[in-house]
Length: 519
Image (cartoon, rainbow, N blue to C red):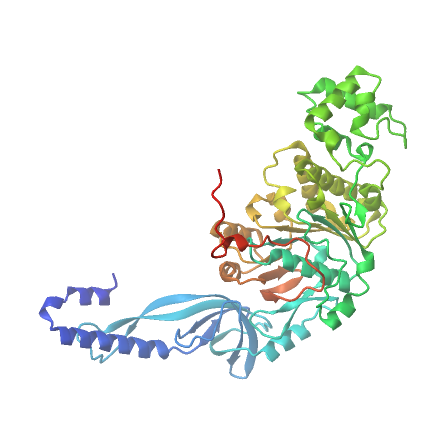
């Protein structure tokens, strides 16, 4: 207990009349409020790059992530507050009307931040005021990198100032996360629209929930200027999915990597050594351009009993029932090797089974990696990444896709393969993927454990800004990295295209909608 507080505690309140005790308490509160209001917003910097700031909690105008102007003498700087909290300090009050103590425990705002335009000069007790949007906008305009802007909304704490991401920063891997209801899916679609509209970068999207199948359809109520700027995009977007898509999502068994074929048939080289050897023999016997088997169903009609056993294994596993196998339809693998579309959306959500989704995801990854020596820049978007490159894969095909994503994360940049990995569950994505990302888009996240991991992995983002993600509203995000070198808070804007996946209606929760009791 503080010394001043101990003095108060030692006075027997039973010996003091109620009126006197209440009077002293009122005096204490009055003195404390006056002291707290007297705290001026002042900042100090010892290195000319970072600063510490204090201000009164009464009518506090400073905000975590907000922009401020610091002035000392004839010098002036623009700064950003990266952390802000409450600090309790003891103030001595000479000649206090209170007889029991000469100290007051007062509270004030204390924070830290970065100088956005450092000149190397330190300062002490520089005055502080919130920057107006025009001042913030001027700084961002002056620091423009000269590449295409991806305007995804506006700065959350500088209303009206465009949040313009640096398109060139996408040549580094990007990690995007946010819990359910944060607006992550909508915001990812918005970002992809901006990339398609403002750059020539090729995009391949692994879309597990059919959320991005509308990237080629402009909304009827879209802003006219934004729709005009996007008008050249839809012709270059191709959706691979079910019968309602542009192309049927199909693969050929023969064009899969042998390890994937074995994974589909659940073959282990040790446990299933005889059947595994049969598969290898079939692959070796195939002539270039003429596979011995084009689909797993042909195994059942093979002349050899060992091959027919493989066919029965495929039948028992349900693999022969998968609709993803191509008969005469074009294969997705052919499109990935020889692209005809600027943007290829692979609608995994249109597939009938989880196994088919895993297979197609791995086929996309291995095909793009196999064609890496072409060195054509490509942004590979993996939504719900915790299912495609999980920290702990639970089946052979997912283990292969995880290994492939890890390899792309480690080596893909030199071949022009750039990842954009999105998830609701950052701790369930393989750490060797997340750790290779140099860009972060963080939306609302309430898990303290997740935020601690993200602060550790994305150390270029001030941890105080990361902590602010717990209070984000819908569509609000922390953006940092090569795409936004000065990490900051962003309010995402409006989409131009239609959303794919939608939430189910909640009419079941409406009053008076009670249904019959089930049996």
